[in-house]
Length: 190
Image 1 (tube, rainbow, N blue to C red):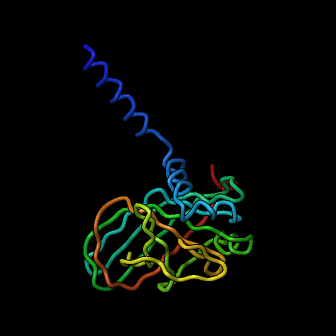
Image 2: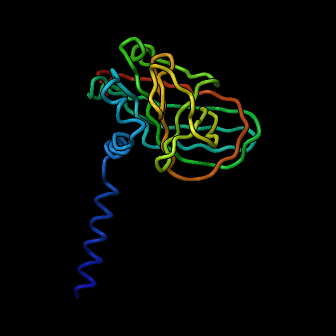
């Protein structure tokens, strides 16, 4: 009887996690990461994507839906789409956050259709190791770039900073591609 009770409690706890808000859970993961924690205090706002799926075989694609926050409040929805061309094979899933350093960066992102070019890069946070990652994939090694506007884990670029958290999968690529974002304000949502 005690084993059955323990199994029922474990199943109940697992089902609660299945219904948990993926945005809240992803925000907690990014807030807990030493590389992103300081950005929450500095940023005017951010866009969070709990799940971005990516795959490719010659031509690659990625897509994810997110929310946009200004000063800690949800103000809209966003979607990210990425198409890449080049040598690539596999699939992966990750979470992503884009910080807006100031109101001008926030306005650029929320003006309807925003795009990061292929030269944009993100910091990949994996088990406390910071690795350089482009929007076309993660490359091995530590991020050694420094500036007066950066810390040891990430930096502002054009008043935005991008971070990813790997969720699973494996993808090898030497591809060119950028991320395109759409935005819809909450007042336009039903």
